[in-house]
Image 1: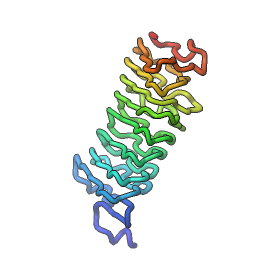
Image 2: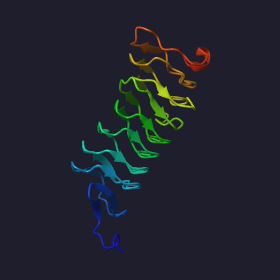
Image 3: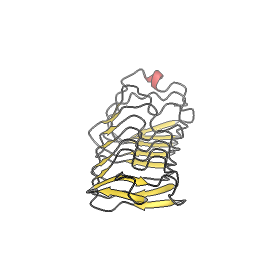
Image 4: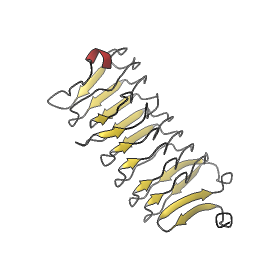
Length: 212
């Protein structure tokens, strides 16, 4: 009854965004700026808000709940520096075309950014590996990739079947075992380290069905 009595709009409890109430009442092409001081965005807070095209996240944000922005229409998102993990399906099914994963983020849960038309991906430099739980979590539209750290992924299909044209491995990348099968447009991989990364799988297997 408490929820039903609240007016439509952004619902805040303390330092937490609890919900955007009014599933069918958000105006078209809405952009929301979440105020400084907010530390948490709750589970499914903006789920299915397809009129939401932009969001500004505060520097104070510590955690974004699972499915928080599932099936919105976000064109871009800037992850604050205090975020260390992106939950399951947090930004799944949006319109994000360019994405940067900050160095502070150390884990992406399953489908964190799945089903987005991401063409340009930057994973910032860090000596700490980025753990990726899911499968093809950056979609199938990647064209330009900067990988600044090792990836810890049991499936090793992060870039599988993408139209990648350009890939750069940063100075902190010491190993590379991602399957690039189906990346037919890939002709060159640039390595910025003075010591080339170790391919922890058969090189021919990693680059099979590419032009590399």
